[in-house]
Length: 276
Image (cartoon, rainbow, N blue to C red; front, top):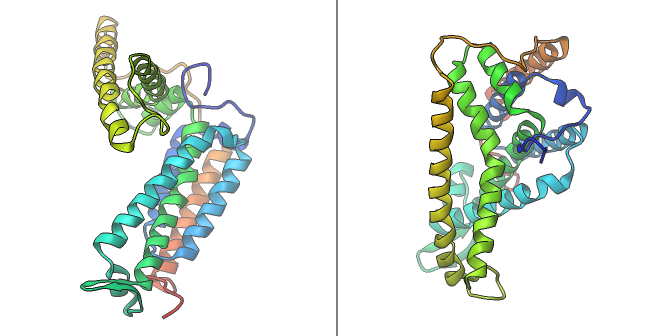
Protein backbone atom coordinates (compact mmCIF):
# COMPACT_ATOMS: atom_id res chain seq x y z
CA UNK A 1 0.00 0.00 0.00
CA UNK A 2 1.29 3.45 -0.82
CA UNK A 3 1.86 6.26 1.62
CA UNK A 4 -1.14 8.06 0.15
CA UNK A 5 -3.44 5.49 1.76
CA UNK A 6 -4.31 3.68 -1.47
CA UNK A 7 -3.53 0.23 -2.88
CA UNK A 8 -1.58 1.86 -5.70
CA UNK A 9 2.06 0.73 -5.87
CA UNK A 10 4.57 3.05 -7.52
CA UNK A 11 6.68 1.10 -10.02
CA UNK A 12 8.61 1.94 -13.17
CA UNK A 13 6.74 -0.19 -15.72
CA UNK A 14 4.81 0.43 -18.96
CA UNK A 15 1.52 -0.52 -17.31
CA UNK A 16 1.85 2.06 -14.53
CA UNK A 17 2.44 4.72 -17.19
CA UNK A 18 -0.75 3.88 -19.09
CA UNK A 19 -3.72 6.21 -18.74
CA UNK A 20 -6.27 5.14 -16.11
CA UNK A 21 -9.20 5.22 -18.55
CA UNK A 22 -7.33 2.85 -20.89
CA UNK A 23 -6.85 0.39 -18.03
CA UNK A 24 -10.52 0.73 -17.18
CA UNK A 25 -11.39 -0.10 -20.80
CA UNK A 26 -8.99 -3.05 -20.54
CA UNK A 27 -11.12 -4.46 -17.70
CA UNK A 28 -14.28 -4.06 -19.80
CA UNK A 29 -12.77 -5.67 -22.91
CA UNK A 30 -11.10 -8.42 -20.86
CA UNK A 31 -14.24 -9.43 -18.95
CA UNK A 32 -16.39 -9.17 -22.10
CA UNK A 33 -14.04 -11.54 -23.91
CA UNK A 34 -14.06 -14.01 -21.01
CA UNK A 35 -17.84 -14.08 -20.62
CA UNK A 36 -18.25 -14.99 -24.28
CA UNK A 37 -16.95 -18.49 -23.57
CA UNK A 38 -17.58 -21.59 -21.50
CA UNK A 39 -14.22 -23.11 -22.29
CA UNK A 40 -11.56 -24.01 -19.72
CA UNK A 41 -8.76 -23.64 -22.28
CA UNK A 42 -9.67 -20.00 -22.94
CA UNK A 43 -9.81 -19.17 -19.23
CA UNK A 44 -6.40 -20.74 -18.59
CA UNK A 45 -4.95 -18.70 -21.47
CA UNK A 46 -6.41 -15.45 -20.10
CA UNK A 47 -5.21 -16.30 -16.58
CA UNK A 48 -1.63 -16.92 -17.76
CA UNK A 49 -1.60 -13.70 -19.79
CA UNK A 50 -2.92 -11.84 -16.75
CA UNK A 51 -0.15 -13.29 -14.56
CA UNK A 52 2.39 -12.18 -17.18
CA UNK A 53 0.98 -8.64 -17.08
CA UNK A 54 1.26 -8.64 -13.28
CA UNK A 55 4.91 -9.65 -13.62
CA UNK A 56 5.50 -6.86 -16.13
CA UNK A 57 3.86 -4.40 -13.70
CA UNK A 58 6.23 -5.66 -10.96
CA UNK A 59 3.43 -6.19 -8.44
CA UNK A 60 4.80 -8.21 -5.48
CA UNK A 61 2.92 -11.39 -4.63
CA UNK A 62 2.85 -10.38 -0.95
CA UNK A 63 0.43 -7.56 -1.91
CA UNK A 64 -1.74 -9.92 -3.96
CA UNK A 65 -1.77 -12.84 -1.51
CA UNK A 66 -4.71 -11.78 0.76
CA UNK A 67 -6.95 -11.01 -2.22
CA UNK A 68 -5.84 -14.17 -4.02
CA UNK A 69 -6.74 -16.29 -1.00
CA UNK A 70 -10.14 -14.57 -0.85
CA UNK A 71 -10.94 -15.30 -4.51
CA UNK A 72 -9.80 -18.93 -4.08
CA UNK A 73 -12.12 -19.37 -1.08
CA UNK A 74 -14.95 -17.69 -2.99
CA UNK A 75 -14.57 -19.96 -6.02
CA UNK A 76 -14.41 -23.08 -3.82
CA UNK A 77 -17.57 -22.06 -1.95
CA UNK A 78 -19.34 -21.23 -5.22
CA UNK A 79 -18.36 -24.57 -6.76
CA UNK A 80 -19.50 -26.52 -3.69
CA UNK A 81 -22.91 -24.81 -3.76
CA UNK A 82 -23.21 -25.48 -7.49
CA UNK A 83 -22.42 -29.17 -7.01
CA UNK A 84 -24.86 -29.52 -4.11
CA UNK A 85 -27.79 -27.60 -5.60
CA UNK A 86 -27.53 -28.46 -9.33
CA UNK A 87 -25.68 -31.80 -9.67
CA UNK A 88 -26.93 -32.29 -13.24
CA UNK A 89 -26.30 -28.77 -14.59
CA UNK A 90 -23.12 -29.74 -16.46
CA UNK A 91 -24.84 -32.67 -18.12
CA UNK A 92 -27.36 -30.34 -19.70
CA UNK A 93 -24.57 -28.23 -21.17
CA UNK A 94 -22.46 -31.17 -22.37
CA UNK A 95 -25.49 -33.16 -23.64
CA UNK A 96 -24.15 -36.26 -21.89
CA UNK A 97 -24.41 -37.81 -18.44
CA UNK A 98 -21.76 -39.87 -16.67
CA UNK A 99 -22.55 -40.42 -13.02
CA UNK A 100 -19.82 -39.68 -10.47
CA UNK A 101 -21.83 -40.08 -7.26
CA UNK A 102 -25.41 -41.23 -6.79
CA UNK A 103 -27.51 -41.34 -3.64
CA UNK A 104 -31.24 -41.87 -4.11
CA UNK A 105 -32.52 -38.87 -6.09
CA UNK A 106 -29.17 -37.06 -5.93
CA UNK A 107 -27.02 -37.82 -8.97
CA UNK A 108 -23.78 -35.88 -9.41
CA UNK A 109 -22.26 -36.12 -12.88
CA UNK A 110 -18.68 -35.78 -14.10
CA UNK A 111 -19.92 -33.06 -16.45
CA UNK A 112 -21.06 -30.93 -13.50
CA UNK A 113 -17.67 -31.35 -11.81
CA UNK A 114 -16.00 -30.21 -15.02
CA UNK A 115 -18.37 -27.23 -15.27
CA UNK A 116 -17.57 -26.28 -11.65
CA UNK A 117 -13.85 -26.36 -12.52
CA UNK A 118 -14.52 -24.28 -15.64
CA UNK A 119 -16.55 -21.72 -13.71
CA UNK A 120 -13.86 -21.42 -11.04
CA UNK A 121 -11.24 -20.83 -13.72
CA UNK A 122 -13.46 -18.14 -15.24
CA UNK A 123 -13.41 -16.20 -11.96
CA UNK A 124 -9.67 -16.73 -11.57
CA UNK A 125 -9.02 -15.44 -15.10
CA UNK A 126 -10.64 -12.11 -14.17
CA UNK A 127 -8.60 -11.80 -10.96
CA UNK A 128 -5.22 -10.74 -12.51
CA UNK A 129 -6.68 -7.88 -14.56
CA UNK A 130 -8.65 -6.54 -11.59
CA UNK A 131 -5.51 -6.62 -9.44
CA UNK A 132 -3.55 -4.97 -12.25
CA UNK A 133 -6.03 -2.10 -12.32
CA UNK A 134 -6.20 -1.66 -8.54
CA UNK A 135 -2.45 -1.76 -7.89
CA UNK A 136 -1.26 0.23 -10.95
CA UNK A 137 -3.88 2.99 -11.12
CA UNK A 138 -3.61 6.05 -8.89
CA UNK A 139 -7.14 7.15 -7.83
CA UNK A 140 -6.59 10.83 -8.68
CA UNK A 141 -5.18 10.07 -12.12
CA UNK A 142 -7.99 7.61 -12.78
CA UNK A 143 -10.63 10.18 -11.81
CA UNK A 144 -9.15 12.77 -14.15
CA UNK A 145 -8.93 10.26 -17.00
CA UNK A 146 -12.59 9.27 -16.53
CA UNK A 147 -13.57 12.94 -16.67
CA UNK A 148 -11.46 13.26 -19.83
CA UNK A 149 -13.57 10.64 -21.68
CA UNK A 150 -16.86 12.31 -20.74
CA UNK A 151 -17.73 10.96 -17.27
CA UNK A 152 -19.08 13.66 -14.94
CA UNK A 153 -16.40 14.93 -12.58
CA UNK A 154 -18.79 14.33 -9.67
CA UNK A 155 -18.98 10.61 -10.52
CA UNK A 156 -15.23 10.48 -11.20
CA UNK A 157 -14.47 12.08 -7.84
CA UNK A 158 -16.83 9.67 -6.05
CA UNK A 159 -14.87 6.75 -7.57
CA UNK A 160 -11.64 8.44 -6.50
CA UNK A 161 -12.83 8.63 -2.88
CA UNK A 162 -14.09 5.02 -2.95
CA UNK A 163 -10.71 3.70 -4.15
CA UNK A 164 -8.89 5.72 -1.50
CA UNK A 165 -11.25 4.50 1.22
CA UNK A 166 -10.72 0.75 0.66
CA UNK A 167 -7.44 0.59 2.68
CA UNK A 168 -9.00 2.75 5.42
CA UNK A 169 -11.86 0.26 5.81
CA UNK A 170 -9.35 -2.57 6.08
CA UNK A 171 -7.33 -0.76 8.77
CA UNK A 172 -10.47 0.24 10.66
CA UNK A 173 -11.70 -3.38 10.59
CA UNK A 174 -8.41 -4.62 12.08
CA UNK A 175 -8.41 -1.92 14.77
CA UNK A 176 -11.99 -2.68 15.84
CA UNK A 177 -11.29 -6.43 15.89
CA UNK A 178 -8.24 -5.90 18.14
CA UNK A 179 -10.32 -3.69 20.44
CA UNK A 180 -12.99 -6.39 20.72
CA UNK A 181 -10.33 -9.03 21.38
CA UNK A 182 -9.09 -6.88 24.26
CA UNK A 183 -12.66 -7.04 25.62
CA UNK A 184 -12.59 -10.85 25.57
CA UNK A 185 -14.17 -11.75 22.21
CA UNK A 186 -12.53 -14.55 20.24
CA UNK A 187 -11.77 -14.43 16.51
CA UNK A 188 -9.08 -17.08 16.22
CA UNK A 189 -9.70 -20.69 15.31
CA UNK A 190 -7.90 -22.02 18.37
CA UNK A 191 -9.94 -19.85 20.76
CA UNK A 192 -13.53 -20.55 19.65
CA UNK A 193 -15.63 -22.63 17.27
CA UNK A 194 -16.81 -21.32 13.91
CA UNK A 195 -20.32 -20.37 15.08
CA UNK A 196 -18.95 -18.32 17.99
CA UNK A 197 -16.40 -16.57 15.77
CA UNK A 198 -19.04 -15.68 13.17
CA UNK A 199 -21.32 -14.33 15.91
CA UNK A 200 -18.46 -12.28 17.34
CA UNK A 201 -17.88 -10.62 13.99
CA UNK A 202 -21.18 -8.78 14.50
CA UNK A 203 -19.38 -6.83 17.20
CA UNK A 204 -16.92 -5.71 14.52
CA UNK A 205 -19.23 -5.10 11.57
CA UNK A 206 -21.73 -2.86 13.37
CA UNK A 207 -19.07 -0.40 14.68
CA UNK A 208 -17.38 -0.54 11.27
CA UNK A 209 -20.60 0.50 9.50
CA UNK A 210 -21.24 3.29 12.01
CA UNK A 211 -17.66 4.53 11.70
CA UNK A 212 -17.89 4.46 7.90
CA UNK A 213 -21.14 6.45 7.92
CA UNK A 214 -19.54 9.02 10.22
CA UNK A 215 -16.58 9.41 7.87
CA UNK A 216 -18.91 9.75 4.88
CA UNK A 217 -20.72 12.59 6.64
CA UNK A 218 -17.41 14.32 7.45
CA UNK A 219 -16.23 14.08 3.84
CA UNK A 220 -19.58 15.27 2.53
CA UNK A 221 -19.57 18.30 4.84
CA UNK A 222 -15.99 19.16 3.89
CA UNK A 223 -16.84 19.01 0.18
CA UNK A 224 -19.93 21.19 0.69
CA UNK A 225 -17.85 23.79 2.54
CA UNK A 226 -15.46 23.92 -0.41
CA UNK A 227 -18.29 24.41 -2.89
CA UNK A 228 -17.87 21.06 -4.64
CA UNK A 229 -20.39 20.67 -7.47
CA UNK A 230 -21.05 24.38 -7.98
CA UNK A 231 -19.52 24.48 -11.48
CA UNK A 232 -20.24 22.25 -14.46
CA UNK A 233 -16.55 21.64 -15.14
CA UNK A 234 -13.37 21.49 -13.13
CA UNK A 235 -9.65 21.19 -13.76
CA UNK A 236 -7.39 18.40 -12.52
CA UNK A 237 -3.92 18.65 -11.06
CA UNK A 238 -3.02 15.15 -12.29
CA UNK A 239 -4.44 15.48 -15.83
CA UNK A 240 -2.29 14.07 -18.65
CA UNK A 241 -2.77 13.66 -22.40
CA UNK A 242 -3.08 10.29 -24.14
CA UNK A 243 0.18 8.92 -25.51
CA UNK A 244 1.13 6.44 -28.22
CA UNK A 245 1.26 3.53 -25.78
CA UNK A 246 -2.35 4.22 -24.76
CA UNK A 247 -3.61 4.13 -28.35
CA UNK A 248 -1.55 0.99 -29.04
CA UNK A 249 -3.03 -0.74 -25.99
CA UNK A 250 -6.54 0.24 -27.09
CA UNK A 251 -5.97 -1.17 -30.60
CA UNK A 252 -4.68 -4.44 -29.12
CA UNK A 253 -7.73 -4.70 -26.84
CA UNK A 254 -10.15 -4.21 -29.73
CA UNK A 255 -8.23 -6.76 -31.80
CA UNK A 256 -8.36 -9.37 -29.01
CA UNK A 257 -12.09 -8.83 -28.54
CA UNK A 258 -12.72 -9.24 -32.28
CA UNK A 259 -10.69 -12.47 -32.31
CA UNK A 260 -12.70 -13.76 -29.32
CA UNK A 261 -15.99 -12.93 -31.08
CA UNK A 262 -14.79 -14.77 -34.19
CA UNK A 263 -13.78 -17.82 -32.13
CA UNK A 264 -17.11 -17.78 -30.32
CA UNK A 265 -18.97 -17.71 -33.64
CA UNK A 266 -16.99 -20.61 -35.15
CA UNK A 267 -14.79 -22.96 -33.12
CA UNK A 268 -15.68 -22.36 -29.46
CA UNK A 269 -19.41 -21.75 -29.54
CA UNK A 270 -20.44 -24.21 -26.82
CA UNK A 271 -19.41 -25.64 -23.45
CA UNK A 272 -16.16 -27.57 -23.81
CA UNK A 273 -16.18 -31.02 -22.26
CA UNK A 274 -13.31 -33.18 -23.55
CA UNK A 275 -14.55 -36.57 -22.31
CA UNK A 276 -17.91 -36.86 -24.05
